[in-house]
Length: 172
Image (cartoon, rainbow, N blue to C red):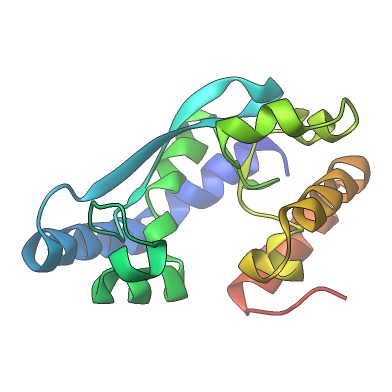
């Protein structure tokens, strides 16, 4: 999707998502306390590191993610509202609405030269892998879908992925 259309879409929908953003931030602060945001360095376009910001869904600790996830955090993850701060990354150009989800920096050393092509495009808030199983698929499958996206991406494919994401449709 052309960048100017992404920015236009984010700006035009700002009254909705900014209101949700403020509500979610307030709920996290009141229910789970500070900090409100989770920050983590992830590889972006051309594998350049950037600091991804999401709403915090877990409490600090060494337990498993399942034990650390707060009740509010579980709701935010189930509804993907924890991803709202990433819209700011779209405005700054660090992310796209659609593209490969930014995985962890530690995975960079594990990619083959072909798999590194997932970084030929800006990372996205949603992507081809997300509509084909999100967290229910293995990382290798996510990378496969990401590479399919990079090879076949188009405006229509981006629109399809956005619609599939909004309406929770699974890819075929």
